[in-house]
Image (cartoon, rainbow, N blue to C red; front, side, top):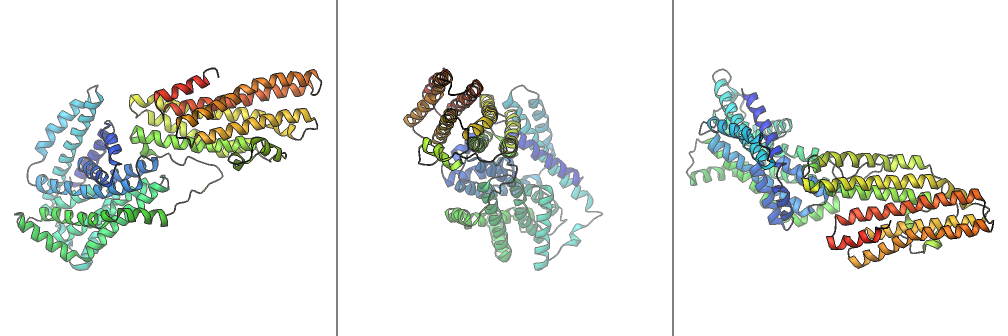
Length: 564
């Protein structure tokens, strides 16, 4: 019965998590929580009070930070608030769960919740899952309480009680271990309170379990940070430091904490033998101590993490998605943010491949020399295997972005579906640009060293235009004002139309028999391919710009590329 109660309790928390994925309230609240440390702290506290899972909030915060939706300072504040929020669960279990027949309240909540779930409205479904989860939480507590009541006549767990420093350390490790297994410090505290309520464990050992459960709750943050970027990993380190330090301080000054707990219990009228309520008081002081120590040091913690905690991204032979992680799928904003960053990662790789395909380096794109000077200097073909570059630097990330966008869009708000679709469009445009580059690259390399100076010059002109296009794309990524953006877009549009002028030059060369028919055919095909790459660049700017600027701004973009 105890195990069944634990299972129901854990499942209730899964249902509770699902219910919140149907609301945008947390997502909207999150945006406000980035304003300052106090609002971030409030966000962490309130969401844990509602969702009863500090581990889940930690994982979500890490994913939000990885997505760039919040700052590291806000992330730290959320973690502090989340830890303090866990005390509410202990108070509810100790004050309500063991004092009344909580199963009586569980039944109507479950019934009403299930009725709401079958409603077509997403909001009512979300309410239904929320009510069902609360009912299941109550039912799980009731089963655990009954289970401990039933076994006390045959199995006396209290005989395994340990006193002194040894007992404190052993039961702290037990609390840590149980939390790691259950993936929920709230579940561990609930088990400890229900067992304490029927005298199956001692108060001293229950206190140690509470300390251990807090340390064990960091395991979810550690797991959640595995695929996070360096910022997310920094927050995980801070979370571990916060919880472990709080536990060590409490263990060292355990007698003081017990004393202040007893005095507080007397002050608010709690009986000296009401150990479940005293455990809730102890748990509050324990978590509050960590907040009082670390909250004033938030800025120092941020500086420490930025200075000493380094997680370098090791580039493997096959490049993979850097920002995407499953936790970011919880909300549309975080999913779109990580997809946008991953698109930038993909474009950077695509840009590098295109640069190598016209025999220049990536540094040439940002060089202060003119495009003509760079091309004049780069007259020796760089040895590359285009297929290998595509497979190692593009293909895997491309596939991961498509898969992530499809999965995230299935959970997204209706108004965000078009954005996920456009991200997939941009990804396909990049793939198309590389396909065009692959087809023209052999001829570019061939005519770089051609003895026919006229054919060589025409291909150098194509390389110059491609380099200029890459430079414009690089500038646009860092432009904030509209006027500069319009200037760059006009220049890119001009490059696009300049390819058509090459037909006149081609006719002149062919008529004067300066190039052969075969050379002319190759040049015509390659000009069309490279012009198509520029066209895709314009289309990519349109899609990205529309999603990051006002309607008035992107109308200009539409007009700029309308004919293309």
